Length: 344
Image (cartoon, rainbow, N blue to C red; front, side):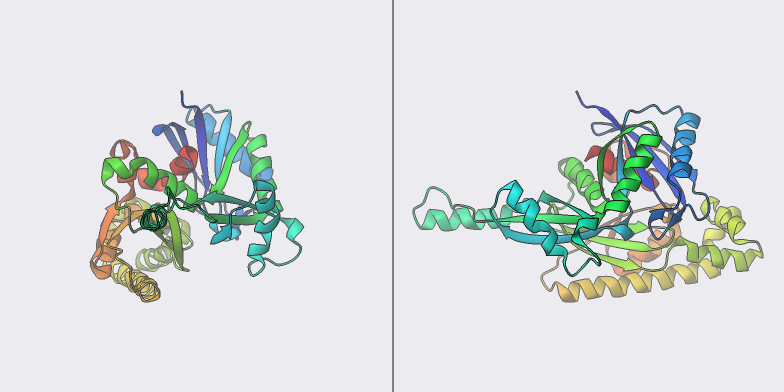
């Protein structure tokens, strides 16, 4: 029987919690993030963060003994690598050296992990070659991995926060792993294309476009504009402070999503996304990317999603399609990472 686990996604704007058993979401909860509690992806006070999680769990009646945390994207290095077949001990020794171009300081200040990438196309080609040569099957000599690195301090942050929140840390992984878990679970049910697809995270500080081929994370494109840029538009349009402007934006106060100033801002965002997508396609000439699932806080802004879909000329889907009974979960798109990390 599947165990219950609490997925935790600490964002710049909101804390998101998802209580999950197997593929089923039992409960979700969120709370506004206090100002400056998260800076450059790092929690500035472990005790304050743990207290916020405890208070949110209590408010929503959530009880959990195990937690899965999403590692902030700013604090994680991700790299796809191909290595010769080797033992776990050999891999643990060699893996850190794959990140020499990414890290500063001493290797001992970092921790690394990996996940094996399934590659049915390569295996099929190897099997065909073996058959032509009269062999029973082709021996594998290499392995493809998604390697992940972060600092020991970041990992200790998560461990301490989980413990002070009254839970045991069961899983900690980047957002990419959360998306892969969702896509694996729902691919057969939803007909998610196995060849190529993208996830668009409309975040508060930035927008991230994740490209995938099968279970393989291929690339991430980051736009250093997010929903906070729309707060400034609302602030100027209504003559209110930034905090009230954000509330207006998230609640569509006086139908502000459709104001002329906002529509112009959506087009600017879509143009930047189009440039990022064009660069990806230029760098990957064989790309057949045609489907994209959007999530994050900005997913509540319907005209933004419509504008992006039209300007990118891509089939845009709501990410709640990737969650079992996602249409029944209020603001499901905001909880996608928390749900996925708990399923992983």
